[in-house]
Length: 98
Image (cartoon, rainbow, N blue to C red; front, side, top):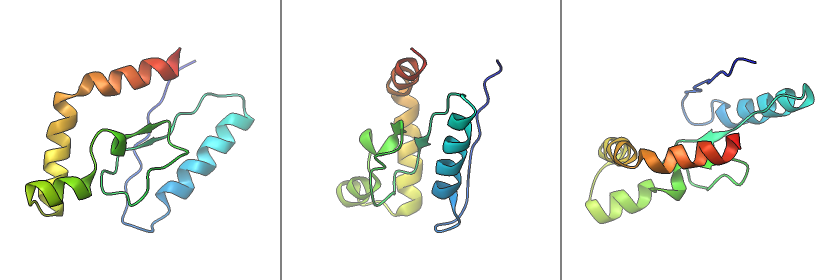
């Protein structure tokens, strides 16, 4: 079976999370594996349903407060931080695939 990765982007309230939950439910009813990741460091809540949650590695509010960065600076910092900590993401993916 071929694996696929979908990147869902959109403005706040556009339905990204709802789409992911529906896609996960649909895939599981077909007997397919489905992993959901939250890669929004500015998320106001840590998604309990996310299999991988970037907020557990870095949280935007902490970045903006401690480093005095705005929202765009926090996003850039987060991307650079994730790049330096790709082993964290690789371990999470390995655990899900085992």
